[in-house]
Image 1 (cartoon, rainbow, N blue to C red):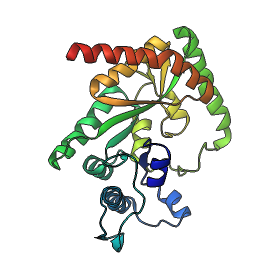
Image 2: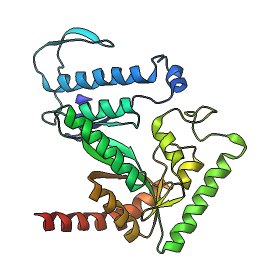
Image 3: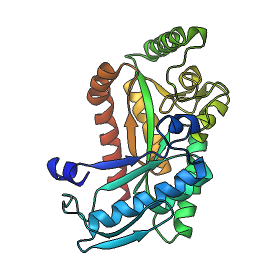
Length: 273
């Protein structure tokens, strides 16, 4: 990873995934229960931080990792080190991410639920004597030239998802037959109603069985940009977007939404200066 950061000119951000499904982890030989996996993640993140910043040999003796006289012989380009991103919606995840991560990645939820998670993570970070991580929220934008066109595309997208899952076929192998084990997917499936706030639509999440990054922001570029700014006002500083139609949405989002968001962020920052 340090080599990749050096090769990319300091562009690496490492997103650490602990794994929320016991069966999925066991497929790859990982038999630790979920909360102990978070303990292991904490150690791994601490090790990465030291490896990227210390030039003299050092020891680490933890529950899950144990080695002596280690020193990394490749320095990352970023100083003091690349950023570490982290996600999860369980109490164990909140604690590790709040105390160790530089970026905390959340899935797109209604504003009230997002604010609740930000407050929880911020409080835990403060209790640990550190600043809260930077918050990131991810969505699946569905754009149209008019609101009507955007919603037609949204309903067509869900129809395609349901056609793929007809007969009980799952989009991924991650969820058990009794439903997802990870708290983030459970939160998505527990959201009541379909439309929330300015543009959030959770039917896409229900159609995918609570798969990660599956809630949609639906509307014109102006509506979706305004909805993203609602999350900015909560304290979110990284707004992540990935369309169900990957290439077309990337083009539309880059051409039509990002400039509006940048313009509004600049306006608000100037007003606050």
